[in-house]
Image (cartoon, rainbow, N blue to C red):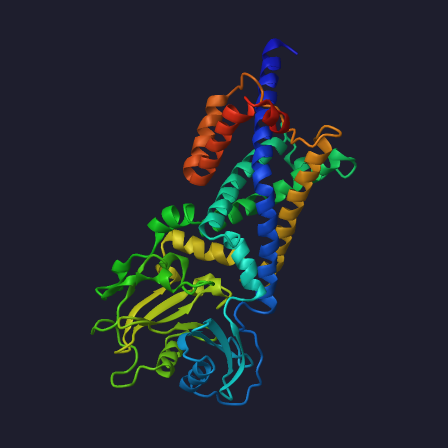
Length: 462
């Protein structure tokens, strides 16, 4: 080999080891979180599909005509001492219970009512089931803002993990097809490495989708950056008076309104604005609002949020995120004046910005609410993520020095080639995903200021 090709190969080997080191340290942080997210994600998938999130799959016996919603709501309210009605979830099919959320002194209660007999079937504390536990862990590790930030860092570093993993496994001499087929003839660490790389290649695009769609729920990248500029503009309400509350104020646990609307102010009741809804002179009650909902196209399951306060509105919403339908393109939110019954706002999927549409579809895919096929597909993905985490740990175990417990990451090469390009790429990732930038900056500082200077740490991490 001549000098020039030898130098090029040496530069490539050094860059490979640097990427490997970053892949190792990103995985060190990410693996525990990805395991938790995959396991809780599968729990939520199957609980929602088989049992429902809020009791909406509780069966009843159809008996002809249903009773009035006023009566059903009164029975639900009476079952909770000093209770206040907040929400009604219409049955998806004739043989299912109607669901009411009633807030009482002991907290929110879910009350299932037989719509044919107006009898309470069962009641239980809201958000106290296995789904809600899994959701709490999946969204914040049950640690509130701290947990949200930890998961956002993990998801952001997941982008680094994915990028470096693809670089490490990508074939240097062509043969991409071979890189997508595991070498089952290999043994030991070589077999694990082959399986790890091939599974990573196969799910790379889907993993990137899940990372980005998951980050859209996060507190920094999602709420402060992405959602802030892609929210639905309140100016489209056409001179309807607005309240100080936003749509997001109605989200408590499983969200009731679309992601694109969360930061948009709610319309306010108490004016002559809006389009004709409930006929003038007809009382505005839960029955008449439900009749209006059916009249304007809310068939089957939808959610009705009751007015809160003097300026509150009736909100009719159908959202695939809440399993109201199997298609995000049918998402719709309608606000009705609590005094006049006039329609103050009517927004559907077609009215969202491109980012809002992408998020509506992304949420449905992420949560597996598009039917059994999406539940099965997401389950396969979660199992693949678990395998990548486990196989990554196995690869470390097989590579570590015999009899030693130190982490033994790949050494950082001296005279790192192409470092300017690597820094530009790192900065681009850091700008696109701020928490990844913070984590990478912290890792570099710790590596240079602590690990490289303190022998005890260098023996473990170096």
